[in-house]
Image 1 (cartoon, helix red, strand yellow):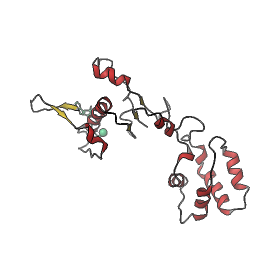
Image 2 (cartoon, rainbow, N blue to C red):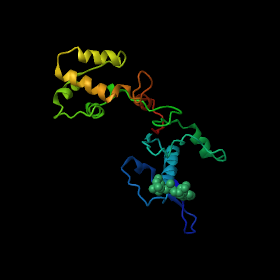
Image 3 (cartoon, rainbow, N blue to C red):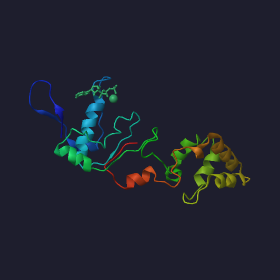
Image 4 (tube, rainbow, N blue to C red):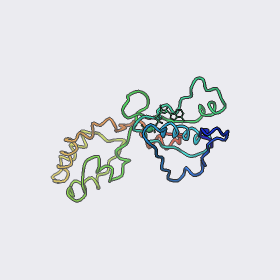
Amino acid sequence: MIIGSRNDGSDSGVSLRAERFNRHTFWCGQSGSGKTYALGMVLEQLLLHTELPLLILDPNADFTRLNEVRSDADTEEARALAEIPVRILHSTSTDGEQVRARFTDLSVASKAAALQLDPISDAEEFNVLLHTDVDPKTFNNESFITGLRASNDPGKLKLANRIENLQVLEWDLWSRGVEAITDVIDTHPRANSP
Ligand SMILES: Nc1ncnc2c1ncn2[C@@H]1O[C@H](COP(=O)(O)OP(=O)(O)OP(=O)(O)O)[C@@H](O)[C@H]1O
Ligand SMILES: [Mg+2]
């Protein structure tokens, strides 16, 4: 796929082998040298010329307009790009679709990280977490905490305090019945850009 042209006066374009993008790629250059710009070109070309699914974790919000085509771009490629399903999910801006996660979809390690739990130094609480199975359809913040508190298990009491103190259940991140990022990925859009 062609991603640009040479500046040595020759006519030949600069091309990369698209099929190699299913492997690790290290993309480096000085600040301001054009990494983001060139990566934008690569992402467009991958969308156009491959079937590779793309999941773009984009904390700098460099590619949040990947699903838009410039009004003056009236080419075959622009028309093709406009047809490709790209979902852009936001985590800081409240405009547009939001990144949401379902706590129950997380691995135990991720749940423990959200709760700042260590499997050794917080062994009792960690073990409660390990054995706590909640149904996302019926999950309710208050009854969950009340249920933990109703027990005489010191691990459960400590976990209830931890959850309340960290206010984890109040995070905007949780899907609370709406579409979670895992659901978005299951719909197989070509690119997600959280
Ligand atoms: N091939 C190009 N043609 C025209 N302008 C370009 C090109 N590459 C980069 N630029 C412009 O140069 C500037 C710096 O590029 P870019 O932001 O991509 O650099 P970067 O390496 O990602 O920088 P940083 O390390 O700060 O993230 C931008 O204004 C960009 O639009
Ligand atoms: Mg950059």
